[in-house]
Image (cartoon, rainbow, N blue to C red; front, side, top):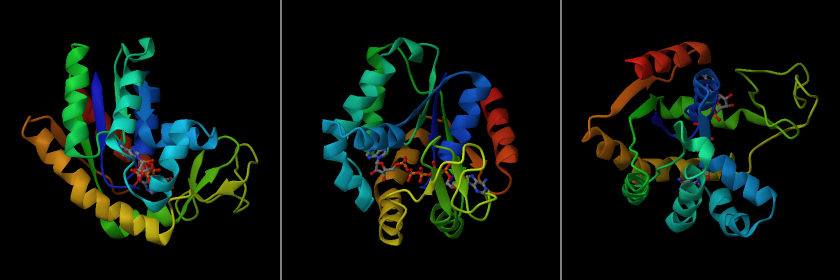
Length: 214
Ligand code: AP5
C-alpha cells in the first residue's frame, strides 16, 4: 500500500505517519526528516536545502524528487510506504506518478488531515523536539515535567529552525499557493479521504486506520 499523508504544516502529518507506520509495519518516508538529517550531517544536499528550509520555502523539485526516487527503490519500500511531506506541488505529484509507474506501483490513498490555521499556528509555535531521541513534544498539548527536558531520555528540547513566526507565515502561504492544488489532482483520481485533525491524537489515528481499512 502506498499512502500519502497530506495536510498543512503542523497538521500532525508526522505524528500520525509514525503511528500508522508502527501499526501497519510499513516504511515512513518524511522528506522534512530526510532534509533535516542532511543539514545536520552537512551533506551536499543539506547545504543546498538549508536556506530554503529555514525561510519556509520549498526546496527545489529536482533535489527532493531525486532523493525520493532513490529512497522508494530501496528493498524496504517493496511492501509499501507512507509519504509524509511529498508531493508538495503539482510538478512533484506528476513526477511521483511517473516514478511509481516505472516501478509498476501507484498511490493508493491520500489522507487529508483537516485542521484550522489558528490550531496550526498553536501546534507549530508550541512544538519542541528532543535533541537526543528526536521525540516531538508540545508545550501545551504534551508538556514535559521539566519544560526544557525530554521526559523519556533527558535530552534538551529544541525549537525547529523553521518554527519561527516569519517562517510559519511563509510555510502557510506556500501551502495554500503551491501544495493545496495537489489535493485537487488526487481528488480527480478519486483517492482522497478527509480525516478530522482536531482532538486527541489517538482518536485521529483510529479515524485514519478506519479510512485505510475501508
Ligand atoms: P516538513 O518537515 O514536512 O514540515 P511541515 O509540512 O511544515 O509539517 P510539520 O513537520 O511542521 O508538521 P506535521 O504536520 O508533521 O505536524 P507534527 O506531527 O509535527 O517540511 C519542512 C520543510 O522542508 C518545508 O518547509 C520545505 O522547506 C522542506 N520540504 C519538505 N518536503 C518538501 C518537498 N516535498 N518539497 C520541497 N521542500 C520540502 O505536529 C505538530 C505539533 O503539533 C507537534 O508538537 C505535535 O506534538 C502536535 N500535535 C500533533 N497532533 C496533535 C493533536 N491531535 N493535538 C494536539 N497537538 C498535536
